Amino acid sequence: MSLNAALRLMAGTVIVASLALAVYVNFNWLLLTAFVGFNLLQSAFTGWCPAITAFQKMGLKQEPKPDQGMSVNQGVHIIAGAIILATSGAVFLEFAPFQLLIVTGIVGLSLVQSAFSGWCPAITIARLMGFKPAN
Image 1 (cartoon, rainbow, N blue to C red):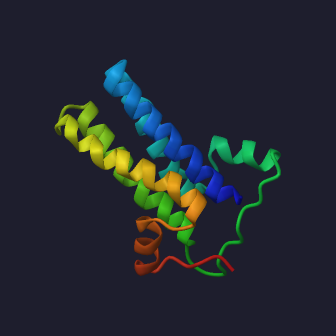
Image 2 (spheres, rainbow, N blue to C red):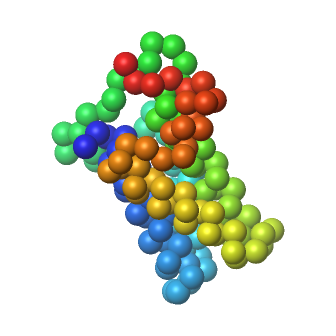
Image 3 (cartoon, rainbow, N blue to C red):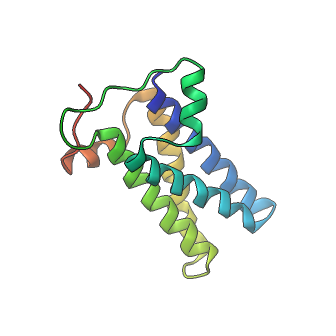
């Protein structure tokens, strides 16, 4: 498993778990969901998040970056991170109904399955937007 696949697996799992905790335990668990979205978004630009360090120590390798432009993986992080941060933030701040979290859950599940299949809608969208595949 590549580092990027492991990162999507972990992010998706934490998103789905924190949504379940927000629904059944305490609404404040949405802050963890938003934190994951923020980390995905910032890691697209900085190339670092706390999980990357742990995965590198476990021996997982990051896919090579394209010679020019941003990679498809960075595009996935931007797309997923923005959707997760926007939806969970809007619900937490009571700008949107609780049902909007269905979108967040779908993104989380999509990230989990993409770790195994190598494909999710965000990968296709990132490619259509011009993000470059790994070399």
